[in-house]
Each structure stands twice: as C-alpha cells, then as structure tokens.
View 1 (tube, one colour):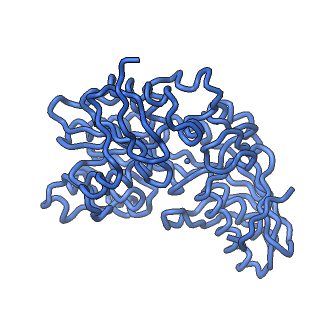
View 2 (tube, rainbow, N blue to C red):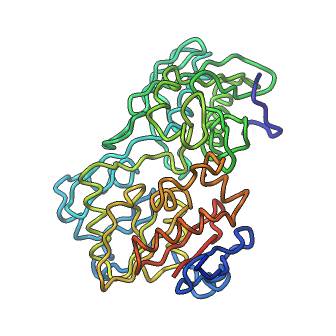
View 3 (cartoon, rainbow, N blue to C red):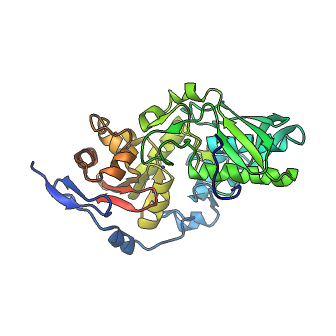
Length: 397
C-alpha cells in the first residue's frame, strides 16, 4: 500500500546516583561517579559559534577554510601541505575532506542522497530521458549524480567515496514513477522495516530516517515543478537490499528485510586507514578533547564543551587512547558507547536495540553495568550520553 503522509509533498555494592535526564531515572554505579543535571551542564557551557573549532592557533585560522559539512575550521597549515591547486574548491563542495598531512579524501554519498536522486530522476524521466540529477543534501549543499532514467524508471548507484568499509558502495537504488493526483512515496523491495523501538521511526514503518525522507520528498517536489505534474506515485526499491542488509548492523538493530535509507548530512565520511589515523592523531594532540561517535555528538560537544576540541571518531572506539595529561570526554548516543563497553548488553533482556531499552526501561540494570564497564575502560574520561534530541541522558564524571 502507498505510504501516505498528511502533509503535502514534502537515530549489591554500588550506590545509586542520579541521571541527568528525568526519563532515564537513576543508575546504580560506583559512588565515585558523579552525574550532573543537563541544565547545570548547559549553564556552565554557553553557546558559541559552531563553525569554529576550539583550540586553533588564531594566526593560522585567519586564512583557514571551513568544512561545510562538519563546520570544522581547517588550519591553514593543513592547506599548505596540500599540493592540489583545487583543494579549497574541493573542500567547499563538501565532497572532499583534508587531513592534517594535506591529503584529500573523498566523501561518499548516503543512501538518502542516492534515493533522492533516483526518485527525482524517475519523475523527470516521465517527460524524457535523464542522465544526471542534482539534489540538495540536508546540509544545503547540492550534489550531482549520474543516473539512468527513462519512461518513469530511474537507477542510481551509491557512491562510497574513499570509505574503506562501506558495504553499500556501488549498490543500485531504483525508483519508478507514475502520474497521480496526490503524491505518495511507496517503499518497495529491499528497504528494511523497523521491528524494534527507539529507531528512526515507529515499529512497522519503513527504515527511512526523517532527514532522508525530507530529502527525498523535496527532490520529488522539485521534479514535479519541472514537469508541471500535480503529483506522482513513486516506488523506491533496492534490488539487492535484503542481501546486503545481512552485512550491515540492521539485523542486530531490529531492522528486517532490507537496508535503511539514511543520511543526516547527505554525505558519508571517508573512513579509511588515512582518515582513521588522522582522527587518532587529532585526539592525541589536543589537551582538552571530546571524542564523538556521530553528528549529534559533534554538534552538542561544540555547544556543551566549547573549550574542548571535538573530534568525530564514529565507531572506532577501540582506538581511544587518551594521555594522562588530557582532559578527555566521550560524547554520543547510547548505542555505540554502551555496546562498545559491553557487547552482551542486550542478551537475555528481550530488547532488540539499545535505543529501545533506554526508551522503555531507562533504569535497566544492564545500562548501569555498561556505563560502569565504560568507565573501567576509560577511568579518567568523562562520558556523556545524549538523546536523539540532544538532551543529556547521563553525564558520568
């Protein structure tokens, strides 16, 4: 059945301590751990300009460049080490990341961006063949993708960039369109369904994140205007989605039958050996540093801890190795941090995801135990767990 939206086209010995979010309740942890109230944390760290990364030398920052995807202010010294005369333009495009060595790595595109291109191409091809599509990313940067589209059918291929571990790189995403009075996005074969709570949508819904859905619907709306059509029924599918999903985290997250259509920025960071090594070096060099697991952690870290350098490390938590003289913080959504601390966190609990556990039973003993184990791994590091809305769920000193 078509997926319709009401609007137009349009993630026995221990003493209890208080958690910093009312929904989370109290954790049972070692009494040496302290948890601050989120209001106290916010009050102690006033907002600042998120386009500036703290800790940069002021002289170098004068001629620096800003990464339009992450807001990171790139030191001029990095640019001086790059011999590509088009480095600044490449960085401004959002498709390239520069490392401290001057090396440029190419970002990939998310399944959301690829799906948006496929859907837009399918609608446009109702009027004639299409070979290239421009779509807007959630961060406002337009990108062009090659497509094969004709007679209401479009095929787009996901670009993995220089990401070494992206199992969806090269995956075909397809869309078919028919003129209709109202616009409907229909999830087809190869797109997963949500079977666990706490994910990007309600149980039973297709695994399409809000940001990706908005991106797709915007692309369809643009195509409708270009073709003078009042509406279209667009079916989105991933022919090899169910097969590839087995190589992703989806089965463990509670998403069945296919892959997820995701993307908070529209871009995929180029996680390869060079990129990972550079992030590790950034963590080592900063005296005050926040290691973040994702975009929410990166955004909130810059607001909550403006005197710290925020470094995106993704799922590479096993590489964390803070120095004795560093003031270190680990900040991000609960799932990656708690599962890294205790991989067996969900065993025999009946929960399919950490997000579901946090939402339905925030005082579960396994959450407290996982936090305890995280502190054992990083005894001198402050650990901050965030909700999807940026609220602080726990702040363990």
